[in-house]
Image 1 (spheres, rainbow, N blue to C red):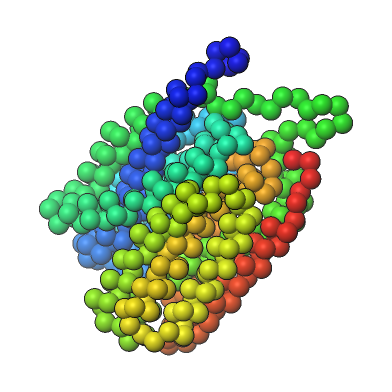
Image 2 (tube, rainbow, N blue to C red):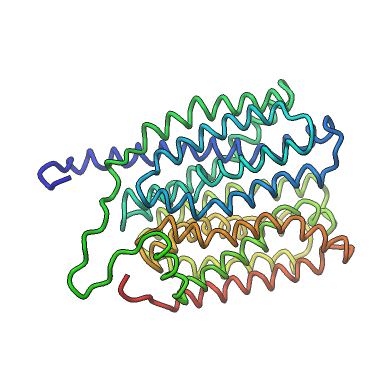
Amino acid sequence: MTAAHQPPPAARDSGRRLFIAGLGIGQIVLWGSLYYSFPLIAEPMGRELGVGKASVYGAATVSVLTASLAAYLVGAAIDRGHGRRIMTAGSFLSGLLLFAWSRVGDIEWLYLLHLGIGVAQAMSLYDACFAVVARRYGPEARHGITALTLWGGFAGTVFVPLIQVLVDHLGWRGALVALGCIDLALCVAIHLLAIDPRADAPRPAPPPSGGPSPLAGRRAVAWAMGQPTFWGLAIAFTVYSLTFSGFSFHLYPLLLERGLDAATVVAGIAVIGPAQVVGRGAVWLLARTRSIRTIGRVTVLALPVAMLLLLLLPPGFGSLALFAVVFGGANGIMTIVRGVAVHEMLTRDAYGAINGAMAVPSVAARAAAPVAVAAFWDYSGSYDAFLVLVVVGSLCVVAGFWYAASRREAGR
């Protein structure tokens, strides 16, 4: 698009807001249907199928592992300009698979379906959406990614009660049919209308003589893997996923074990979601001119602080609420840090491919963590030793990110 045909600033701002709002609504719906639905569906489904909790939750692990393996291919395809096709197909696939899930009759079919659901997650959730925004806005992508995380933060708030109502009135099978209809009717239309390949950021112009050539695909990933920043970020995000996925999954029984009653635990956990949104909003309003290096350095320090608060403060709602505010705020901001770090700290070339490659160990760790923590509890008989490991893990996250933030890769 030439300068003579550029839309006026007001039109560009309005178009950007509509683009981000459309993708944001899609993230609320897709996170709700593909992620938040599982814990609410799992119990009644397990009873009807006659299988135990571990077998049912194994399907969730299958979907997350599949999403991790598909992340690189999805990101590379979006880098090549196929964002609308990828995300539209992901929404369509999610709707069809939710319908199929509603008809499942045995555990084998459940696992097979969740292979497909993992592919749909890779094609439609945050990493794919971030890659679409990065391609559209190039150097200005950070604000769009931050705004998307604000939208996505409301997924649990909207969909957990909605799914519970659907399960109560329609049963778990009927709830899945309703969620599939929402995905097909709303998300497919949003991605077809909001993502316009013609408006994507143009491919980089050939570099001047002697300058670095633009990176793409496998060459971009190979270059990134040669940079210390990549490995610092990869270690930080993988340990973060491993530690805090297991921690979040087991938080409810962990707090009960520490002597808190169920009502206090539920009230405390309820603070985490709003704290995540507030943390992301603070980045949006107060730190929009700060580098992601600075934001990330402060955020990762809050993680061990939150764990130490949980370990050292006396049990009670006040202590739990303080922990939830610190932990929730840091957790929310980490979503932004992870989405923007490659773009601002490593290279703006081939965001989808590099971010997808970095996501593979992180998502695999997130999938394995709940089972690993359960096995550790079986071995030790309590969560006390695990809490100490969480503190150690959070310190490893600090070390990895601060190491990455201390490096500055030249020429990209």
